[in-house]
Image (tube, rainbow, N blue to C red; front, side, top):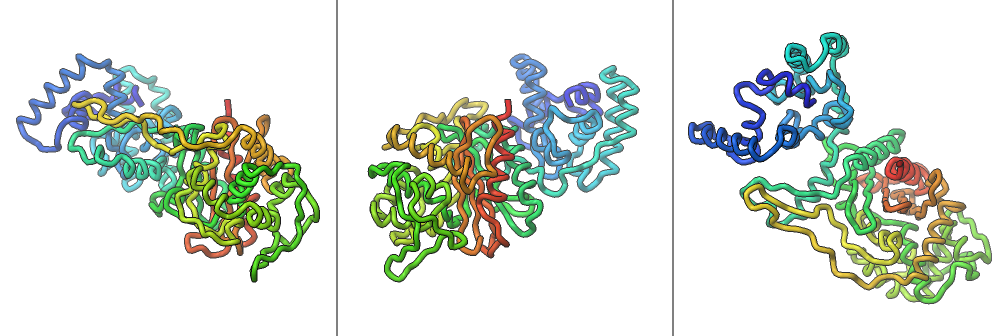
Length: 478
């Protein structure tokens, strides 16, 4: 793309240089006045004195509008071609470069013929400028770029961007051009979107969400649904759903803190509390088993007995300590995850287990700055909160590992690295979850219907675990 812009020159930008275009985007209003034109020229001169040409071009590409709601080259590459800037072909680069002169009139989603014609003009200019061989340009003409992201899947990071903008507070209300230094990792964002789309491909009408965090709570990727273009509702941060057996993470953590051990023997048999008699999945009971097996098999009866034994208040306080912000129902059914929570909170709470016991406050940006003022806000580490003991963490990691190795989460197994996680499925299969971690990445996946309707036999150890695995394999790849 850099070659396309350099070769095409004013064919791309009309009467203004790229430096002048950057000056307009970064510092000036759209007003067409003589005063603004003089300011533009002075700013362009200042930019060229201060920055290298490559820096100017990169800054311009990150701000420019490419049509169809795509601001910045990364968004445009995803919006039109479902790829990253580094992987653009010559034909795709020529088409994107050609859009800059009149993005709305040339956008290939609405005007494919115009976009292709403009790309040919750019290719001709590139050959004339010596930026590309005539044979390469001819090959690009023979196989022109085609839009592959027009189904709405190319809105990379938009759920994350909306969430971050809502978090920045007064900084976003400034009249100056605000730059937010975010925690999003583009490669992980693409992996998240791919994994979610692929995992839901055979499940029409079912939605989902995926969020990944680092060990300090930095949000690395966020896919709030199948398609941002079709629905901007963020199922990671906004959807409050029952976590089902995924909530047993807190039940067992509280039990471990109360002195229980994974090898303690417990009774997996029908249980009744008052007039409530919960059942195990498929009504299967295993008699006397260890806590480790009970967790791996996601026994409901054992979880209910544990909560009755250690007290619901202990479980609620621990969940809140780790970051659950929803109000939890102080009832016997607490053990089975009937209180609605967000995927965001569930994933953030698990970070404390992954990082050795320290609860975190998730964050999506580290700095806010403006060109005239510089840094106007910078993140400082959150105060340390009451955490989990090393012995509790060690035991909990063993329980979470058993879920993946021999329990309900076997489909989340990773090649060459130990995975830790927990499945969750709610009544009538209305919600299915998998939350877990491996290496230095913590990831949560939820799927379900937006109207809370039942799914046909879908469980947390099925599609959610498979989506989690697909993402984590890319996230942890060397």
